[in-house]
Image 1 (cartoon, rainbow, N blue to C red):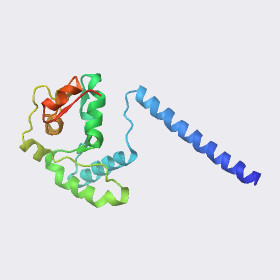
Image 2: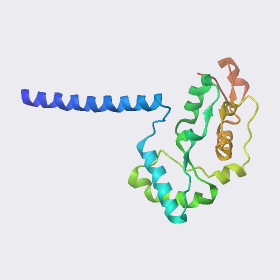
Image 3: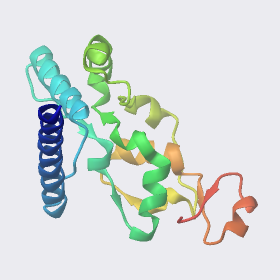
Image 4: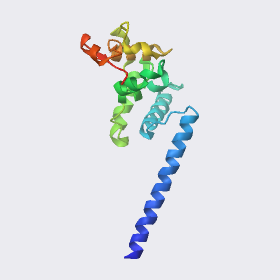
Length: 178
């Protein structure tokens, strides 16, 4: 019985040491400005880039929305991250390659358990011509990518920022910093 308890304690210690190393690596990445992504997302991105390269014989850029945008005012960071939630991990490819990328995603999503992620149909988003209303949360995001800008505008371009909770009901869609 003592050997069994000792074995369990050793396993727990090994697991805790492994978790500590993972947390330490994550903290180190954060300090260096490297974002920590779900390994499945990085697998999806890599598979898409590889298979699109094989199909078109050129490097096709696959981007993560979170890498394409910057929050201007840190006070709105939590509101933005909370509202975008999983969508900040959606992938972007040039519209020319969207259908091929979507087909690849559909082929591998079960094998790699990729249900938390998506690929944005940039052409469709651009065609909808989403606007950014003055005072919206979208104003707090900067990007040089036209597809990311259009997508952000479609999601939060009509979501009005309010400083006080009492002002939330003045708008059909609104949000506070906290």
